[in-house]
Image (cartoon, rainbow, N blue to C red; front, side):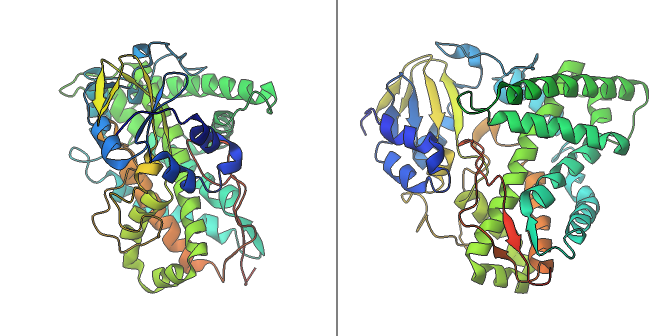
Length: 406
């Protein structure tokens, strides 16, 4: 393996014109598994090299370890633990996981299932009489916001305000200074500030009056690692909200798009509901919600294959490319819900493996199962659909579907 500069391929992947189908460009990129760019950064695109570096203790998620440090996202004061390194990362992740999933809270996701099913059912009920629906605006977008409000303990009367903040924050993620009005970015920054202030008020209230929700548990837990500060609780809630919301929206939307492009699999899912679990795993490999980790840093010189990445270098991880690597997956460009040994990179790998993955999986399983069961002869209106601008969190911005019984 040799390190060569391949700026053209990466630029084409990042260009919006490739958003609908970046996979042929990923194949081109994999010819050089570790590719140095003109600006001194490195792009890693093959499965073996990606998994190796994701488990390398010399890989840093802290922007301060870059030779040319990046600014923290506007509107943030304390980074979430996803942007920290051990031991602080490990401490905060353990504290969050005590209340979010196994082994300490194994029943969290299953306990939410009645609420998940009820929310999905209500949203699909609203499709009645419509010849055409937008799966994003009418379903995939509001669903995870409703779930996260219930999980965190946001009062029902505050949900509309909460949703507006989320909309502005998500919208600002795709901000393009060349084409978008500055107001789009400013609204996102203000929404982050307003949301943090609101969450801070909820945390203070939960200190005084604990309830049966995640914020109460985080605010009042004195576990083996001590107690989170209020700023750490707010950053953790923000991480769960923003990362979890966008991931789930894209996974559901990409999933329905893939099923409509593979009608034989859609019909099979109607006949075999038990197919849902492996099907969602295949979706995470085939059409993942997160395509790129845009930066990591090298604590020190890191050897990846035959390439030495110098200390302080910015590293870009092409997760979606690794999950289509033919050296790891047989017929990687075929959607196969019966695929075995499907150790995809849809939720990353290593110490930063997505801690909200179990919830996103179950949300998607329930959502797709009910959509397939209840939609009457669904058909795509436009293929490919329009995509969000982001090459990192990739998914349609709208997905218009016609149904026969509308």
